[in-house]
Length: 94
Image (cartoon, rainbow, N blue to C red; front, side, top):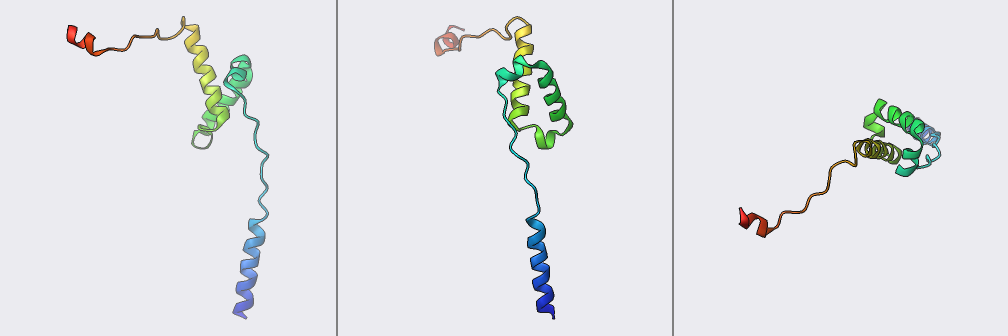
């Protein structure tokens, strides 16, 4: 009898595990797309911030965040101006 109960238990576990429905993959939008579509970017960022443990590193959250950062830096006059690297000659001069 226990043999049949164990078989029924294993079969029911297999049956239950096969019932999971998969979500279709979400279309990944580019950084440029999020720059051009501010409203959708804000909606995406709100969604990402509401569940950062799961969504923060998804492609759409990363792209929306980068688009916002790019827009923010661009609005301040181009962001940080590039610097020349320090060379050994520069150090010797001091």
